[in-house]
Amino acid sequence: MLKELTDLYRQEDRDLAPYAVRNSGSRGRRHPETAHPFRSDFQRDRDRILHSRAFRRLEYKTQVFLNGSGDHYRTRLTHTIEVAAIARTMARTLYLNEDLAETIALAHDLGHTPFGHAGERRMQALLRDDGGFDHNAQALKVVDELEIKYPSYNGLNLCWEVRSGLIKHRDGNTAVLDGAVLPAHPFLEAQVADLADDLAYYGHDVDDGLDAGLLNQEMLMTLPLWRRAVLPAEQAGLEPDSERYLAFSVRNLIDMMVGDAIRHSADLILASGVAASGDVERCDGALIAFSPEFALMTGELHDFLFENVYFHPEVIGVNHIASDRMENLFRVYIANPELLGDHARSRMERVGVKRAAADYIAGMTDRFAMNEYLRLCEHGERRRRRHSTSPFQV
Ligand code: MG
Image 1 (cartoon, protein in one colour):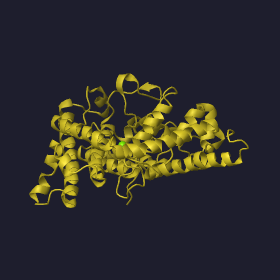
Image 2 (cartoon, helix red, strand yellow):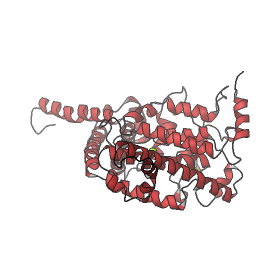
Image 3 (cartoon, protein in one colour):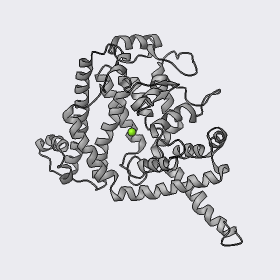
Image 4 (tube, protein in one colour):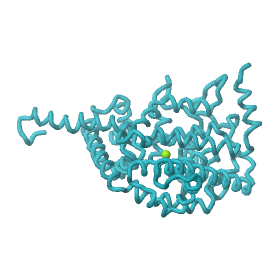
């Protein structure tokens, strides 16, 4: 007995809520393809992302703590896997399309530069007058343009639903895909992936912050959300500040946030009266959201993490040095475009040298960017100096 595509379609019709996105209703791909006998379109898209080079590179990209600085810190890859797991739980529990939510989650950070948010901020500064840089838009560019796999076009040729789900900033009718303005709020599976992203990093950045010694129990106890998260550890008689107490409390923190988001979203969906996935975009607000109580508490946690982790001098310091090097590398490429990779060089004429260099660097892992910096900037500089006849000639 085989589960074939028609069975998958039937399963979706039977199991999903009327407002979930279905494969059978997909707006399709830019380049039409024949259907796969065993996998739905969203399942194929998930697999395309898993098999992409950009996905594998997430392993060596910084999430918050510089990649390679500790074996337990989240990388972009482990962050992404946590987001996908949370998105699947939320989508399944709300009778939404789990495959689609998972796929968007797996692709959501493909556009991140090396060196975390410091790297992204630097890239934004470098491209301020040249169209800017946004990691969400870059994720779409990675799957639409930068991955090379198929004979007659670039990109992974993903479904419209996955591609549009990667576009997050939708204020003021500025978000456009294939010439059409996107609604302020996307379908529910994209909203799930978006909230799962926030929720995942709230949880794991507390964990990594504790691991790094930037946070401790005393600091965290100033947060109402943490005071609630530690109750099960207290009831179990664990010693405050012990490794088990903290790890169990991070676990409870994540579970509490996921539970609240699911329950409140179910209420919002019911109250909205949406009866089809297309109805969602006509709603005034997001339907996948924390309750007001949790929105307040997670907002406090968000601010707390910015103050005590993301902008901690220890985190900022190394990321700043790394970003300086990334900027140096960018300038070397602009001045010497022949040093760019083959694909980047082939795009130069169409997109300009700055954009080709930026896209090339944005795709790099931390370690590749660092090696390129050492090879082209530091060692290259030394070599050039050694070979020059005058100390002023570079
Ligand atoms: Mg993310």
